[in-house]
Amino acid sequence: MDGMEIYGEKNLQRKQSLYHSLDEKFEIRTEKYKGQQYSQIYFARLHNMRNLLYSLVGKWKPHLPVNTVLGLEEGKECIIVGTLFKHMKLKPSVLDEYSKKRSAVPLMEPHNFMHPDDHLILEDETGRVKLAGDVLAPSVFVTGIVAALHGKETGDGDFLVHDILEAGLPPQLPLPSGLKEDKFVVFVSGLSVGSSMSNPLQFQLLVDHMTGHLGNVKEQSMASQIVRVVIAGNSVEIPLGILNGQNLVSKDQSKLSEPIKELDILLTQLVAAMPVDIMPGPCDPANYSLPQQPLHRCLFPGAAVYNTFVSCTNPHLFELDDVRFLGTSGQNIDDLEKYSEAKYKIDFLERTLRWRHLAPTAPNTVGCYPFTDRDPFFIESCPHVYFIGNQKKYETRLVQGSEGQLVRLICIPRFCETGVAVVLNTRNLECHTLSFSTSLDS
Image (tube, rainbow, N blue to C red; front, top):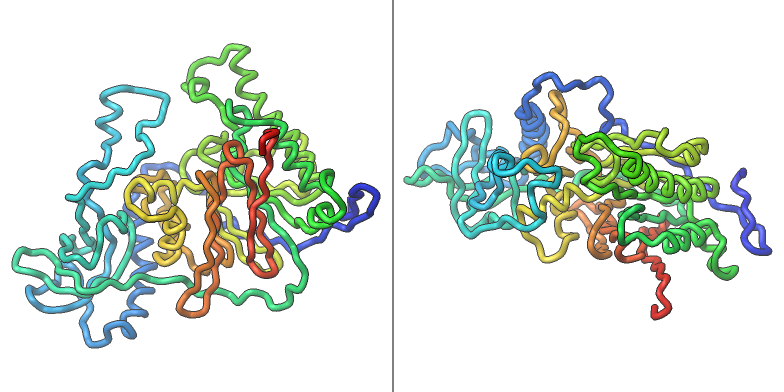
């Protein structure tokens, strides 16, 4: 189409942007499941983070020695660096649940497992020590975070924490200064095509708006400034009962394929007009463990013939006109909500940035591939936009780091429940929502 589209009676040129996928770090190409132990990913995480924290300790507490857990001496102040482990009284045991009942439904219900008796332990290669004091609130932290702690060993063998050093926001490439025109990225998640809550007319309104087939000349002009659509997971919903390993009868086969066919029709309309990134989510036909691999192109025979159709990993990392985006379909943040507490969901996003880790609870409570030589969830470079999909409501925040980093955080609501998509302007990182309703009362 060469970027030229017709909206109403006026010819408008859809704006273009330079796209660069950085998903390679999340792709699983040659790795195999050959009995690898999950300890390797923890070792890789501790190695990366410890080197980083050691470089920061000199400015933080230059007068204190750095010790290992085994090298602690009672009453002597020092700094130790290690991985936090959170002992939780209410944390479910998958083996216990499995022994009670084999089921095709998820074993863990999505509620919070916090308890007043929860406590933190710090672990390195030499040993582990229980942490004491009121500096570290167990409700804020989770298993898998690497931090530096200032304190001293007590007579009880605990480590009394006086202060904590987190890695903080990673270094960030400056926002490109040459962006002088508005270009928009639309985020949508939780389409859940095939679910009882999905509304095909609502989906069609979304597609027609973005492709410029709805609204007046002004709205169509804004639609021409949309340079990319990112679909952040849970695009279809397939009944769990169908996915229990039993042979499918013909009527169940249609239940399995119809939602995907319907999604392909919508995607084909979109990719005919603009570039679209689609990420897998926990309900999509993709691998369960993070990082989820791209949805196979054969699922979308209509959309896949367009070079504007991009099937991505989850997490998804990319650049548009040198503006860096990082996001997930929500599993990493939803899991933090089960094992820690925050006033707002978006607080969890900010914490993961300051911990420099996308999914600290993987592999403990979030399924992930047993990498042996790296931890792909380590955040090396600070994104300009950090988003998560499949949330109850829209939230956003602009976060500033100590070295001038500026990050737009976005919680994308489930579209099938809210009818809301999120629009971001790459020129200034401002964002707003688009709401679609088929109700006469709205």
